[in-house]
Image (cartoon, rainbow, N blue to C red):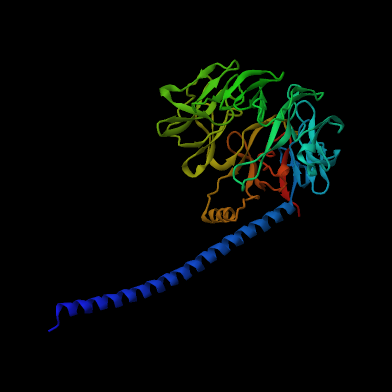
Length: 477
C-alpha cells in the first residue's frame, strides 16, 4: 500500500510536469501572438506610412496645379487663374505672387501695376501704403532685414531696419526688432528668439523706441491690433497705449483684448475676466447669478459679445450686451461654437454633428444648421450690371467626418506631419441660406510651404469679397 509520502511525491512530480507543459504552451502562444501583433502593427504602420506619403505626393501635386484668379459676385472670371498666391484687393490693387518671379501688384483689369520683384508684399492699408520686403531680404540674418513702405505707384516712401512691421494706423505703425535669443535649461530645446517692438510715425521717427535689453521690464514684446485709438501692449503684464505712445491704462492685466464700442475684456491675476471702459473702470465683473465668464471672438463689435459662462462645473455659451445682461436665452440650443455678429447675423455650431447655422440678434435661427464651415456675412460693393449691393457669406456644405478621414489624419500626425492641403467645395449664400454661387471651387489650406505664404486662404480672408472681387483657386489644366 502506497504511503502518504509517496503519493505526495507523485502529485508533486505531476504538478511539475504540468507546470512545465503549461509554461511551454504559454511561451509558444505568446510567441505566436507576438508574431501576429508584429504583423498586424507592421501592416497598420505600412498603411499609415503609405497614407502619409500619398498625402505628401498629393500635396505636392496640388501645389503645382493650383492657380488663383478673381471673380465677381455674378461668378464671372475677371482675372484669369494664373498666380501661385494672392491677397485680396485693397485700394484698387492686389498683391500677387508667382514662383521664380516674386510678389507684385495688379489692378482690377489684371494689368501689372507694380512689377513682381519683392520677397514679400502685403495689401495696401487704409492710409495708402503697403509693406514689402526687397528681393533677397529673407536670406539675410534677422538683424539685417528691412521693411519698406511703398505707395500705389510703387515708390518707396519709408525704409527701415526691421524684422517685421505693421500697417499704419492714424499715422503710426508698430515695428519689430530682433534683439537676440534666450536659452532654455534643457539642452534639447532650441533658443527662443526675442524681439522688441517700437512705435514710429510716417517719417520713421520713433515715438516709442526699441529696448534691446531682454531683461528690461519696459520692453514691449507684443503689441495688439489698434482699435478705437488704443492698442494692447504687453510688457510683463498687458495694458493699453494710445497713438501718441502714452500708456493710458497701466500694464496690470494677465490678458487684455481690443476695445470695441468703448469696452474691452481683461483678465486679472485672480484668473477672473471683467469688462472695462477706456478709463480702466470696471463695468462688468460678473453676470447674473454670479456667473463667471470669458470672451469668445472680438468683443462687443455689434454691441453683443459672445462669452463662455461657468457656474461650478457647468459651462455653456451665450451673448451679453454692454450692461452684462443676457441678450437672449441659449439654454437648450446646444451651442458648441459662437462667433460675433456681422450684418445682424452670427454663425454658430450646434453640438449635434457640429453643424453650423446662423442666428439673428434675438437668438432665433435665420439659417438652420447645414454647413461644415462658414464665414461672416459681408456687403459686396455694387458690381457692374447689378442694381443693388448684396450681402453674402462663404460656406461649405456639411459632410460627415468618416473613419477614413480619421485614419488619414492619424497617419499624418503619427508621422509628425500635418495636412497642408485640403479639398472642400465652397460657395456663397445669401441671408436666407440660398446659394448665390453654388459650391464648386476647391478650398486650399496652406498651399505654400514658405512660412510667409503658408497662411490658409481663410486666414488671409481670400474668400471675402473685397472691392467687388473675390479670389478663387482653380486647377490649371
